[in-house]
Length: 292
Image (cartoon, rainbow, N blue to C red; front, top):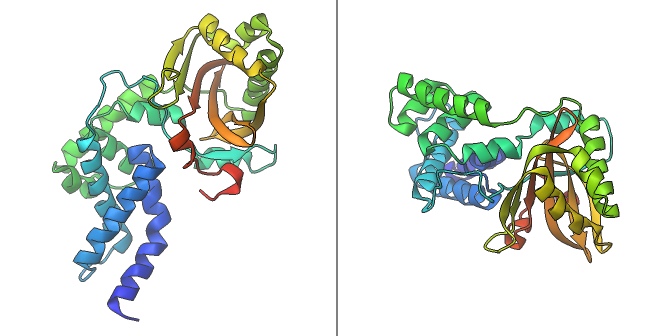
């Protein structure tokens, strides 16, 4: 086997892990694929001579690419709880025993939304250390900081996450019953029943891309008013686990039109994240049996 063949083989063995790192850095599967491809270009040019920990080196390379991509994003709002919804991971919910494994393997959309508010170096330090167990000694040179400073970056990010990411009810089956009640009430046009399953301070993020339909809607009355659209009989709802949370895929004429995730706490829905951007829905992972 030639050196080039060995390098290609090793990279392919690590591709899934690198994509997972890039997705959590960037919140987009298309951007994650771009980052992995750029990492491969850099790796193929540099070669792997003298590299002892090949997997760790690849993680460093893709992390540097992601950091550059985060820094180059032209618009970074102070209030990132806008209508942007990160790319979801979808698993059709058949009620089987694998649900808990899906939950354990997923990262919630609420966390990804909060990660969008972090400075690039903070996000990188938090993702690498808290989600992938990379040491601060390894993170430090990526962000051009000392290990102690890298630790501080992750600590600041962790405080932001802990203060902003809602803690859902532990039992996904209980959450599912609340979500089913939401859709049943919406289907029947029962406004009072909708209000009963929504937290008074519920937040709906509806991301339809560059469209007037994109909006952040706050409060049970306003969200219930939007939910009545599901009374439309042409909409087919399929229960799903969406990024570890109960949700649904919405189909019209066999066309995927939106993916929805619900956060349920104390028996009421406190957040709804809905992605309806046609271009981004084409990249939804897990829909119709596609692999993660």
